[in-house]
Image (tube, rainbow, N blue to C red; front, side, top):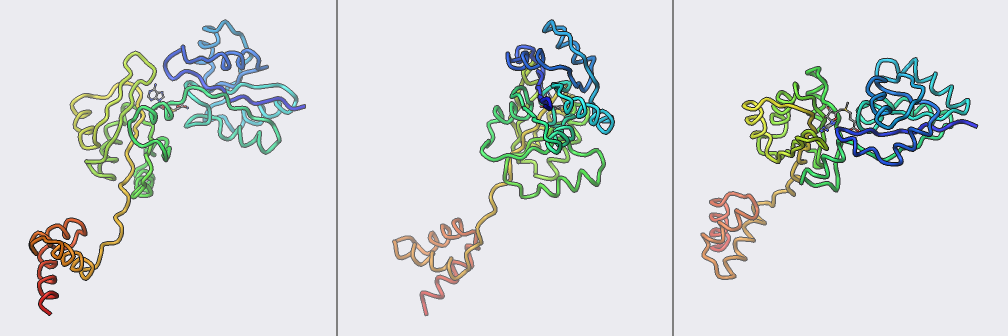
Length: 279
Ligand code: SAM
C-alpha cells in the first residue's frame, strides 16, 4: 500500500508555533523532504529528532519529485517541509501534491503557520472575500499585466514581498490602485518586532522612503469600491427635484440635494425642473 505525503508547516518566526501534531507528524514520517535541509535540521535538532532527509526545492522539483513519489508508492511516508510556513504556498510543494493526486497517493495537510492567513486576520480589512496574489513578478511587463488584471478587483488582495523590493512594489501598487487605497503592512509576524502598519498606499510609500524597510512583509490591500450603479438620467433627476420641491424645499435646495444623490449637474437639474414646472 502507498504511503502518505504530509504537508507540514513550520514556524514563520516563533518556535512556539510548532504544534503537537506537527511534531508527531515529523517524528512519525519515514523521511523528510525539505526545501533546505540545513534549515530543517535546526528544527529537528530543536525537537531532538533525527530523520533521513532529501532535498526538494524550486530548481530540483522535476528530478526530486519522481524520486519522492516512487518512495511513497513503495509504502514510505514523507513529511514535506519548507523553510518557513506552509508548503505549496509560494513555496515548493504544488507539483508534488499534483503528482501524488495523479498517482492515487494520499496527501494530508497539517494546519499551521502561514503568513498570508495571519496577516489577513490582523489587517483590519474585509476578510470575507480575498485573493492571494503571491509575489509580483520582477519582469516589468509581467508585473504590469498582473496589476492591470487586478484593476477593479473588489476583494481584499494579499501580496508577499521581500524587504529590498518593498518600496518599488508599494510605488507600483499606489500607481495601480491610487494613493488613497488602504493597505495593512504586516511585518515580522510572530516575531519580537511584529508590527502592523495600517495606512494608505500613498502614505506607505512616503513612510518607507524615509524609513528603509527591514524584515519580512505581507501586504494586505483593500479591494476596489463597488462600481457605482448606473447614473440616473436627467429626467429622473428632474423628477427627484420636483418631488423634493413638492415636499417643501426651495427649488435651489432641491436641485442641490438631487445633484448630491444622483451625481448629476446641479444647474442642469435646476434649469430642467423650473422649465418642467412652467410647462
Ligand atoms: N509558505 C510560506 C507561508 O505559508 O506563508 C511563505 C513563503 S514565501 C517564500 C516567503 C514570504 O512570506 C516572505 O517574503 C513574506 O512576504 C512572507 N512571510 C514569511 N514569514 C513572514 C513573517 N514572519 N512576517 C511577515 N511576512 C512573512
